[in-house]
Length: 420
Image 1: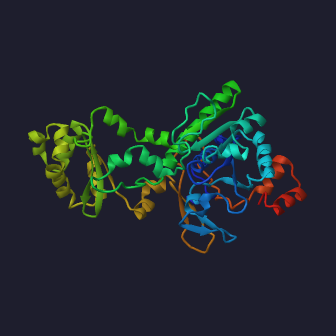
Image 2: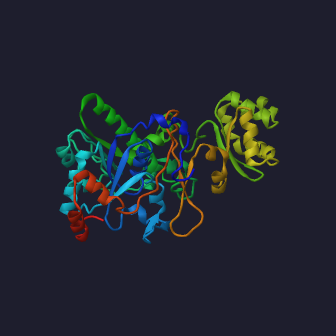
Image 3: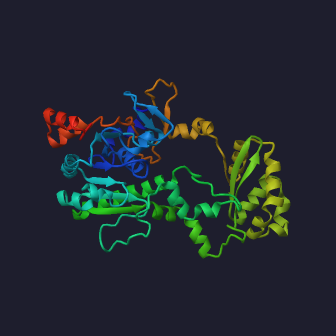
């Protein structure tokens, strides 16, 4: 699907679930921008506040393209800011801070993902925003939490800077998956720490909006990346609490990668009837009477000397997709390890509109591909997607409409570098 296109147009009459919800986001990189992009896709009006000249730090990421004015627009920014408007505002200038606080009462949700304490030092923290707009929902995303009330516990790490790999590492998943004698594999699932945290942030906002519908009260939503990763890597602590140790057999199931004629595929077998189906479909019925494979512990113990050779000899005559099609037809969960070109060309991805094409503005013919919206609603139109905003593209539009500023005042603020 291209930017500007609409899918399932038959649902257009129903509108979108967050139509009328307004979000003011002082955000950067991905841990918050992914969440606000999701809210925008569901109908929210998202106004992004960023530095009036450089923009937010995600614009400086690599790889990058250039915008119509020749400024760099990095990949991190490109994939997290569809459907938003950009206001360039210098929050370190008292006039910029005052403009932000004047905007707050016009919005339902205010959110930020600065290092803890930064929003307060800038004068745009929860207390300052709630003072001018008590019903506000205020979302703060940080590495280790940013409590504002005495009853909210502080983290011993709350002064640490954090990116996704930091929270992922501290969740235990890197050590859990580390090959003995090798360094940890960092970022094995992209920005899991960012996107996972964003999802919890979006859920928190939706819950707080629902609470406000019932009570009329605003509130503070505090989401820590470390918390989100502990929740998403649950097997680390759950398995340990149930006796699984590094020196033991590990998880008692087959959940491994196997080689086919053209690459790798993954199989998961966790129950006895699934193992029976696996043995039958690959032509190894003798496994069902083999005492070594009679238990799940035996599956793990003999993975390399019995199970892997059996599966891979069968798969050697098949492509990874053919192997998975055959296994899936027999009720055995399996999936091919796709390369990027294979993901892009996949018929499921195309049918579900899971890649959005953003036309480049720097003369490169191939579009930038951005993940689509995984939330599919039967009575809600999907799209149209709006392109990412240029730095401060909507500053005058927003300040004029929301605060009634005239051209002379806007020109003076721009001349002083307070706005774009």
